[in-house]
Image 1 (tube, rainbow, N blue to C red):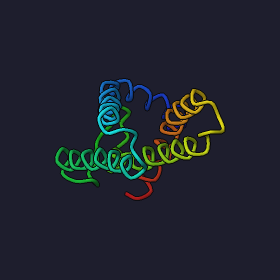
Image 2 (image 1 turned 90 degrees about the vertical axis):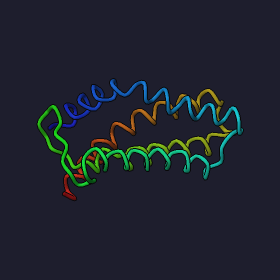
Image 3 (image 1 turned 60 degrees about the vertical axis):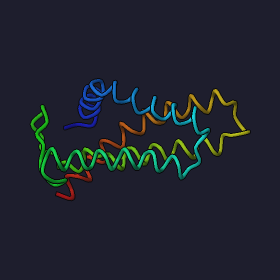
Length: 138
């Protein structure tokens, strides 16, 4: 599948997960409201908890991380590529770096805009790379 077709497929798949996105963001916002701004370890713990949950759910649903799950486009990626460690971790790492380097140097609204843009752009780009890595490993 060509990258532009893969990107289109990612976007269609993500539209179904919009509720999850709002839920995971909302959960983070609730934590911030109650505990204050998290440090990098707390962020890593929050994201790590989500990744562990996704991994366990994938193992239960598919019987293992190396099982194959059929996509509507007929391509059988390994289930491990559904966990999105590269896409999530990579986009969050860049977001962290932009946040740290932009603080005090850029207006906060610009930092928020950059992070929002980069999370979306990098996540989708890294999904394509993650899919390729998953296929190389199988």
